[in-house]
Length: 394
Image (cartoon, rainbow, N blue to C red; front, side, top):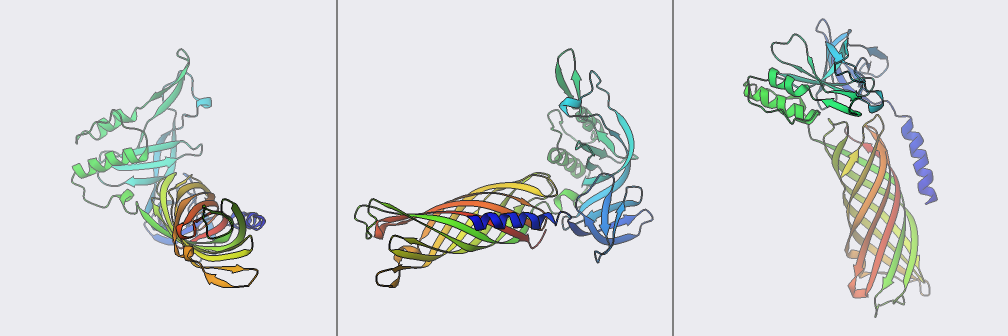
Protein backbone atom coordinates (compact mmCIF):
# COMPACT_ATOMS: atom_id res chain seq x y z
CA UNK A 1 0.00 0.00 0.00
CA UNK A 2 2.89 2.38 0.79
CA UNK A 3 4.32 1.74 -2.67
CA UNK A 4 0.98 2.58 -4.30
CA UNK A 5 0.68 5.88 -2.44
CA UNK A 6 4.23 6.87 -3.34
CA UNK A 7 3.55 6.03 -6.97
CA UNK A 8 0.35 8.09 -6.93
CA UNK A 9 2.20 11.11 -5.52
CA UNK A 10 4.91 10.80 -8.17
CA UNK A 11 2.32 10.53 -10.92
CA UNK A 12 0.53 13.68 -9.69
CA UNK A 13 3.78 15.63 -9.98
CA UNK A 14 4.44 14.08 -13.38
CA UNK A 15 1.03 14.92 -14.82
CA UNK A 16 1.17 18.40 -13.37
CA UNK A 17 3.93 19.25 -15.81
CA UNK A 18 1.61 18.45 -18.73
CA UNK A 19 -1.07 21.08 -18.09
CA UNK A 20 -0.87 22.45 -21.63
CA UNK A 21 -2.31 20.28 -24.40
CA UNK A 22 -1.75 21.14 -28.08
CA UNK A 23 -3.43 19.32 -30.96
CA UNK A 24 -2.97 19.55 -34.74
CA UNK A 25 -5.23 22.08 -36.44
CA UNK A 26 -5.25 25.15 -38.63
CA UNK A 27 -6.42 28.74 -38.67
CA UNK A 28 -7.68 30.88 -41.55
CA UNK A 29 -6.39 34.43 -41.77
CA UNK A 30 -8.63 37.36 -42.62
CA UNK A 31 -7.31 37.48 -46.18
CA UNK A 32 -8.05 33.76 -46.69
CA UNK A 33 -4.68 32.02 -46.23
CA UNK A 34 -4.73 28.79 -44.21
CA UNK A 35 -1.93 28.07 -41.71
CA UNK A 36 -1.47 24.58 -40.27
CA UNK A 37 -0.26 24.55 -36.68
CA UNK A 38 -0.67 23.15 -33.17
CA UNK A 39 -3.49 24.71 -31.14
CA UNK A 40 -3.91 24.77 -27.36
CA UNK A 41 -7.17 23.00 -26.53
CA UNK A 42 -7.87 25.44 -23.69
CA UNK A 43 -9.93 27.70 -25.92
CA UNK A 44 -10.87 31.16 -24.65
CA UNK A 45 -13.64 33.30 -26.09
CA UNK A 46 -11.17 36.04 -27.02
CA UNK A 47 -7.81 34.33 -27.62
CA UNK A 48 -6.10 31.11 -28.67
CA UNK A 49 -2.50 29.96 -28.34
CA UNK A 50 -0.88 28.33 -31.36
CA UNK A 51 2.52 26.87 -32.16
CA UNK A 52 4.11 26.19 -35.50
CA UNK A 53 3.95 22.63 -36.78
CA UNK A 54 7.30 21.82 -35.14
CA UNK A 55 6.04 23.08 -31.77
CA UNK A 56 8.92 25.56 -31.43
CA UNK A 57 7.23 28.98 -31.17
CA UNK A 58 4.05 29.96 -29.34
CA UNK A 59 1.92 32.98 -30.25
CA UNK A 60 -1.48 34.27 -29.14
CA UNK A 61 -4.16 35.17 -31.69
CA UNK A 62 -7.38 37.10 -31.12
CA UNK A 63 -10.70 37.26 -33.00
CA UNK A 64 -9.61 40.39 -34.87
CA UNK A 65 -6.52 38.65 -36.28
CA UNK A 66 -8.04 35.49 -37.82
CA UNK A 67 -11.36 34.53 -39.43
CA UNK A 68 -11.68 30.98 -38.05
CA UNK A 69 -9.78 27.96 -36.77
CA UNK A 70 -10.28 24.22 -36.42
CA UNK A 71 -8.59 21.74 -34.13
CA UNK A 72 -8.26 18.04 -33.45
CA UNK A 73 -9.75 14.96 -35.04
CA UNK A 74 -13.30 16.03 -34.25
CA UNK A 75 -13.44 18.84 -36.79
CA UNK A 76 -14.31 21.38 -34.07
CA UNK A 77 -14.65 24.78 -35.78
CA UNK A 78 -14.58 28.28 -34.27
CA UNK A 79 -15.42 31.44 -36.23
CA UNK A 80 -14.65 35.07 -35.44
CA UNK A 81 -17.76 37.29 -35.28
CA UNK A 82 -18.84 40.69 -34.08
CA UNK A 83 -21.89 40.15 -31.83
CA UNK A 84 -24.04 41.88 -29.27
CA UNK A 85 -23.68 39.72 -26.17
CA UNK A 86 -25.77 39.88 -23.00
CA UNK A 87 -23.33 40.20 -20.07
CA UNK A 88 -26.11 40.16 -17.47
CA UNK A 89 -24.97 37.88 -14.59
CA UNK A 90 -26.79 34.62 -13.93
CA UNK A 91 -25.23 33.63 -10.58
CA UNK A 92 -27.85 33.86 -7.83
CA UNK A 93 -25.68 36.11 -5.64
CA UNK A 94 -25.07 38.60 -8.50
CA UNK A 95 -28.49 38.91 -10.13
CA UNK A 96 -29.81 42.31 -11.19
CA UNK A 97 -32.73 43.45 -9.05
CA UNK A 98 -36.08 44.07 -10.81
CA UNK A 99 -34.38 44.52 -14.18
CA UNK A 100 -35.46 42.13 -16.88
CA UNK A 101 -33.64 43.86 -19.72
CA UNK A 102 -30.50 42.36 -21.28
CA UNK A 103 -27.23 44.14 -20.62
CA UNK A 104 -25.72 44.41 -24.08
CA UNK A 105 -22.05 44.66 -24.89
CA UNK A 106 -20.49 44.81 -28.35
CA UNK A 107 -17.62 42.30 -28.70
CA UNK A 108 -15.72 40.31 -31.30
CA UNK A 109 -15.51 36.70 -30.14
CA UNK A 110 -14.56 33.21 -31.18
CA UNK A 111 -17.86 31.32 -31.51
CA UNK A 112 -17.97 27.52 -31.64
CA UNK A 113 -19.89 26.43 -34.76
CA UNK A 114 -22.28 23.73 -33.54
CA UNK A 115 -24.66 23.39 -36.52
CA UNK A 116 -24.07 24.47 -40.11
CA UNK A 117 -26.61 25.09 -42.86
CA UNK A 118 -29.39 27.56 -43.68
CA UNK A 119 -29.33 28.22 -39.93
CA UNK A 120 -26.05 28.22 -38.03
CA UNK A 121 -25.96 27.61 -34.29
CA UNK A 122 -23.00 28.88 -32.27
CA UNK A 123 -21.98 28.55 -28.65
CA UNK A 124 -19.50 30.34 -26.41
CA UNK A 125 -18.67 30.49 -22.72
CA UNK A 126 -17.62 33.94 -21.55
CA UNK A 127 -14.97 34.83 -18.99
CA UNK A 128 -17.44 34.42 -16.09
CA UNK A 129 -18.43 30.91 -17.16
CA UNK A 130 -21.84 31.96 -18.51
CA UNK A 131 -22.98 29.92 -21.50
CA UNK A 132 -24.29 31.79 -24.56
CA UNK A 133 -25.88 30.51 -27.76
CA UNK A 134 -26.22 32.44 -31.02
CA UNK A 135 -28.37 31.79 -34.09
CA UNK A 136 -27.74 33.08 -37.60
CA UNK A 137 -30.28 32.47 -40.37
CA UNK A 138 -30.07 33.53 -43.99
CA UNK A 139 -31.45 37.05 -43.44
CA UNK A 140 -29.10 37.91 -40.55
CA UNK A 141 -25.93 39.91 -41.04
CA UNK A 142 -24.41 38.47 -37.87
CA UNK A 143 -25.31 35.88 -35.22
CA UNK A 144 -28.07 36.89 -32.82
CA UNK A 145 -27.91 35.79 -29.19
CA UNK A 146 -30.65 33.47 -27.96
CA UNK A 147 -31.55 35.09 -24.66
CA UNK A 148 -32.07 33.36 -21.35
CA UNK A 149 -32.41 36.06 -18.69
CA UNK A 150 -32.35 35.74 -14.91
CA UNK A 151 -33.05 38.55 -12.45
CA UNK A 152 -34.15 38.99 -8.85
CA UNK A 153 -37.79 39.99 -8.34
CA UNK A 154 -37.85 41.88 -5.03
CA UNK A 155 -41.63 41.87 -4.63
CA UNK A 156 -41.73 38.11 -4.88
CA UNK A 157 -38.43 37.56 -3.08
CA UNK A 158 -37.16 35.08 -5.64
CA UNK A 159 -35.10 34.72 -8.80
CA UNK A 160 -37.07 34.82 -12.06
CA UNK A 161 -36.11 33.18 -15.35
CA UNK A 162 -37.19 34.52 -18.73
CA UNK A 163 -36.66 32.00 -21.57
CA UNK A 164 -36.88 34.62 -24.33
CA UNK A 165 -34.98 32.31 -26.67
CA UNK A 166 -38.12 30.23 -27.26
CA UNK A 167 -39.95 33.16 -28.84
CA UNK A 168 -36.81 34.01 -30.82
CA UNK A 169 -36.70 30.46 -32.21
CA UNK A 170 -40.37 30.61 -33.16
CA UNK A 171 -39.84 33.78 -35.20
CA UNK A 172 -36.46 32.93 -36.74
CA UNK A 173 -37.42 29.38 -37.77
CA UNK A 174 -40.99 30.19 -38.83
CA UNK A 175 -40.56 28.62 -42.25
CA UNK A 176 -40.63 25.08 -40.79
CA UNK A 177 -42.87 23.37 -38.23
CA UNK A 178 -41.74 23.33 -34.63
CA UNK A 179 -42.97 23.81 -31.08
CA UNK A 180 -40.38 25.35 -28.75
CA UNK A 181 -42.49 26.11 -25.66
CA UNK A 182 -40.67 23.58 -23.47
CA UNK A 183 -37.22 23.66 -25.09
CA UNK A 184 -34.41 23.72 -22.49
CA UNK A 185 -31.44 26.06 -22.89
CA UNK A 186 -28.65 23.60 -23.64
CA UNK A 187 -26.56 22.52 -26.61
CA UNK A 188 -28.16 19.12 -27.39
CA UNK A 189 -31.71 20.53 -27.42
CA UNK A 190 -30.91 23.62 -29.47
CA UNK A 191 -28.72 21.64 -31.87
CA UNK A 192 -31.53 19.16 -32.50
CA UNK A 193 -33.94 21.99 -33.35
CA UNK A 194 -31.52 23.72 -35.73
CA UNK A 195 -30.61 20.44 -37.41
CA UNK A 196 -34.33 19.71 -38.04
CA UNK A 197 -34.79 23.19 -39.50
CA UNK A 198 -31.83 22.76 -41.86
CA UNK A 199 -33.18 19.43 -43.08
CA UNK A 200 -36.59 21.04 -43.58
CA UNK A 201 -34.90 23.66 -45.77
CA UNK A 202 -33.37 20.94 -47.93
CA UNK A 203 -29.85 21.10 -46.54
CA UNK A 204 -28.09 17.73 -46.89
CA UNK A 205 -24.52 18.71 -46.00
CA UNK A 206 -22.53 17.33 -43.08
CA UNK A 207 -23.65 18.73 -39.78
CA UNK A 208 -20.69 19.98 -37.75
CA UNK A 209 -21.77 18.39 -34.50
CA UNK A 210 -22.19 15.00 -36.18
CA UNK A 211 -18.71 14.78 -37.68
CA UNK A 212 -17.10 13.10 -34.70
CA UNK A 213 -19.82 12.76 -32.14
CA UNK A 214 -18.73 9.33 -30.95
CA UNK A 215 -15.06 8.54 -30.51
CA UNK A 216 -13.09 5.45 -29.62
CA UNK A 217 -9.99 6.51 -27.74
CA UNK A 218 -7.48 3.68 -27.03
CA UNK A 219 -5.11 3.91 -24.07
CA UNK A 220 -2.58 1.94 -22.03
CA UNK A 221 -2.14 1.92 -18.26
CA UNK A 222 0.67 0.75 -15.99
CA UNK A 223 0.77 0.81 -12.24
CA UNK A 224 1.14 -1.09 -9.01
CA UNK A 225 -1.62 -3.00 -7.27
CA UNK A 226 -1.61 -3.94 -3.60
CA UNK A 227 -4.08 -6.63 -2.75
CA UNK A 228 -5.48 -8.73 0.01
CA UNK A 229 -6.94 -12.21 -0.34
CA UNK A 230 -9.07 -14.15 2.10
CA UNK A 231 -9.44 -17.92 1.84
CA UNK A 232 -12.30 -19.69 3.59
CA UNK A 233 -13.28 -23.36 3.51
CA UNK A 234 -16.69 -24.95 3.62
CA UNK A 235 -17.41 -27.90 5.94
CA UNK A 236 -15.44 -30.83 4.53
CA UNK A 237 -12.89 -28.61 2.82
CA UNK A 238 -9.80 -30.27 1.36
CA UNK A 239 -7.54 -28.01 3.43
CA UNK A 240 -7.12 -27.34 7.12
CA UNK A 241 -8.99 -24.02 6.78
CA UNK A 242 -12.40 -25.53 7.38
CA UNK A 243 -14.72 -23.03 9.12
CA UNK A 244 -11.79 -20.62 9.33
CA UNK A 245 -10.68 -17.60 7.28
CA UNK A 246 -7.05 -17.11 6.31
CA UNK A 247 -5.61 -13.88 4.89
CA UNK A 248 -2.72 -13.08 2.59
CA UNK A 249 -1.44 -9.95 0.84
CA UNK A 250 0.76 -9.10 -2.09
CA UNK A 251 1.87 -6.34 -4.48
CA UNK A 252 2.35 -6.71 -8.20
CA UNK A 253 2.81 -4.68 -11.38
CA UNK A 254 -0.46 -4.09 -13.26
CA UNK A 255 -0.77 -3.71 -17.04
CA UNK A 256 -3.96 -2.63 -18.84
CA UNK A 257 -4.96 -1.93 -22.42
CA UNK A 258 -8.34 -0.36 -23.05
CA UNK A 259 -10.53 1.89 -25.14
CA UNK A 260 -12.91 4.65 -24.06
CA UNK A 261 -16.09 5.02 -26.08
CA UNK A 262 -17.95 8.32 -25.90
CA UNK A 263 -18.36 11.87 -27.08
CA UNK A 264 -15.84 14.60 -26.35
CA UNK A 265 -18.00 17.50 -27.48
CA UNK A 266 -19.74 17.85 -24.13
CA UNK A 267 -18.08 19.78 -21.31
CA UNK A 268 -19.16 17.08 -18.89
CA UNK A 269 -19.67 13.67 -20.40
CA UNK A 270 -20.47 10.04 -19.92
CA UNK A 271 -18.28 7.45 -21.60
CA UNK A 272 -17.75 3.70 -21.49
CA UNK A 273 -14.18 2.43 -21.05
CA UNK A 274 -13.58 -1.28 -21.68
CA UNK A 275 -10.28 -2.84 -20.57
CA UNK A 276 -8.19 -5.98 -20.57
CA UNK A 277 -5.74 -6.22 -17.68
CA UNK A 278 -3.02 -8.55 -16.40
CA UNK A 279 -1.26 -8.89 -13.09
CA UNK A 280 0.70 -11.48 -11.12
CA UNK A 281 -0.51 -12.25 -7.65
CA UNK A 282 1.10 -14.32 -4.91
CA UNK A 283 0.55 -14.57 -1.19
CA UNK A 284 1.06 -16.85 1.80
CA UNK A 285 -1.66 -18.61 3.75
CA UNK A 286 -0.76 -20.76 6.73
CA UNK A 287 1.91 -23.20 5.52
CA UNK A 288 1.48 -22.61 1.80
CA UNK A 289 2.44 -20.03 -0.82
CA UNK A 290 -0.05 -19.41 -3.61
CA UNK A 291 0.66 -17.70 -6.94
CA UNK A 292 -1.34 -17.21 -10.13
CA UNK A 293 -1.77 -15.09 -13.24
CA UNK A 294 -4.92 -12.98 -13.26
CA UNK A 295 -6.32 -11.78 -16.59
CA UNK A 296 -9.33 -9.52 -16.17
CA UNK A 297 -11.93 -7.78 -18.33
CA UNK A 298 -13.46 -4.52 -17.10
CA UNK A 299 -16.53 -2.58 -18.24
CA UNK A 300 -17.04 0.63 -16.29
CA UNK A 301 -19.15 3.69 -17.16
CA UNK A 302 -17.21 6.88 -16.48
CA UNK A 303 -18.38 10.42 -15.73
CA UNK A 304 -15.84 13.16 -16.44
CA UNK A 305 -16.05 16.77 -15.27
CA UNK A 306 -14.88 19.69 -17.45
CA UNK A 307 -11.52 21.41 -17.20
CA UNK A 308 -7.95 21.33 -18.45
CA UNK A 309 -7.17 18.51 -15.98
CA UNK A 310 -10.51 16.71 -15.66
CA UNK A 311 -11.60 14.69 -12.59
CA UNK A 312 -13.58 11.52 -13.23
CA UNK A 313 -15.37 8.76 -11.34
CA UNK A 314 -16.32 5.33 -12.60
CA UNK A 315 -18.08 2.23 -11.33
CA UNK A 316 -18.15 -1.03 -13.23
CA UNK A 317 -17.95 -4.80 -13.41
CA UNK A 318 -14.91 -7.07 -13.52
CA UNK A 319 -14.60 -10.60 -14.89
CA UNK A 320 -11.34 -12.31 -13.92
CA UNK A 321 -9.70 -15.48 -15.24
CA UNK A 322 -7.29 -17.30 -12.93
CA UNK A 323 -4.60 -19.35 -14.68
CA UNK A 324 -1.20 -20.90 -14.02
CA UNK A 325 -1.91 -21.19 -10.31
CA UNK A 326 0.56 -23.03 -8.07
CA UNK A 327 1.00 -23.61 -4.41
CA UNK A 328 4.08 -24.59 -2.45
CA UNK A 329 4.02 -26.46 0.87
CA UNK A 330 6.76 -25.47 3.26
CA UNK A 331 7.27 -28.93 4.66
CA UNK A 332 8.07 -30.69 1.40
CA UNK A 333 8.67 -27.78 -1.07
CA UNK A 334 6.32 -29.35 -3.57
CA UNK A 335 4.79 -27.38 -6.44
CA UNK A 336 1.58 -28.34 -8.18
CA UNK A 337 -1.12 -26.73 -10.30
CA UNK A 338 -4.38 -26.24 -8.45
CA UNK A 339 -7.66 -26.88 -10.26
CA UNK A 340 -9.49 -23.75 -9.02
CA UNK A 341 -6.98 -21.48 -10.72
CA UNK A 342 -8.41 -22.14 -14.15
CA UNK A 343 -11.76 -20.65 -13.23
CA UNK A 344 -13.63 -17.40 -13.71
CA UNK A 345 -14.68 -14.97 -11.02
CA UNK A 346 -16.80 -11.82 -11.09
CA UNK A 347 -16.94 -8.68 -9.04
CA UNK A 348 -16.99 -4.90 -9.18
CA UNK A 349 -14.59 -1.96 -9.24
CA UNK A 350 -14.76 1.73 -8.45
CA UNK A 351 -12.16 4.36 -9.22
CA UNK A 352 -11.36 8.07 -8.97
CA UNK A 353 -8.83 9.91 -11.05
CA UNK A 354 -7.88 12.89 -13.15
CA UNK A 355 -7.12 12.99 -16.85
CA UNK A 356 -5.84 15.39 -19.45
CA UNK A 357 -6.00 14.72 -23.17
CA UNK A 358 -2.98 12.42 -23.15
CA UNK A 359 -2.01 11.57 -19.58
CA UNK A 360 -4.06 10.54 -16.58
CA UNK A 361 -3.72 9.08 -13.12
CA UNK A 362 -6.14 6.81 -11.33
CA UNK A 363 -6.66 5.25 -7.92
CA UNK A 364 -8.82 2.13 -8.17
CA UNK A 365 -10.47 -0.33 -5.80
CA UNK A 366 -11.67 -3.71 -7.03
CA UNK A 367 -13.14 -6.80 -5.39
CA UNK A 368 -14.06 -10.17 -6.83
CA UNK A 369 -14.79 -13.63 -5.51
CA UNK A 370 -13.69 -17.05 -6.80
CA UNK A 371 -15.60 -20.19 -5.80
CA UNK A 372 -13.88 -23.58 -5.91
CA UNK A 373 -16.60 -26.18 -5.20
CA UNK A 374 -14.27 -29.14 -5.71
CA UNK A 375 -12.09 -27.87 -2.85
CA UNK A 376 -15.06 -26.59 -0.86
CA UNK A 377 -13.33 -23.23 -0.66
CA UNK A 378 -13.72 -19.60 -1.66
CA UNK A 379 -11.23 -16.82 -2.38
CA UNK A 380 -12.16 -13.15 -1.96
CA UNK A 381 -9.65 -10.79 -3.56
CA UNK A 382 -9.45 -7.06 -2.90
CA UNK A 383 -7.05 -4.80 -4.75
CA UNK A 384 -6.11 -1.12 -4.53
CA UNK A 385 -4.10 0.13 -7.50
CA UNK A 386 -2.40 3.37 -8.51
CA UNK A 387 -1.93 3.78 -12.27
CA UNK A 388 -0.77 6.20 -14.92
CA UNK A 389 -2.50 6.11 -18.32
CA UNK A 390 -1.49 7.32 -21.77
CA UNK A 391 -3.97 7.88 -24.59
CA UNK A 392 -2.79 6.64 -27.95
CA UNK A 393 -5.31 8.96 -29.64
CA UNK A 394 -6.98 12.06 -28.26
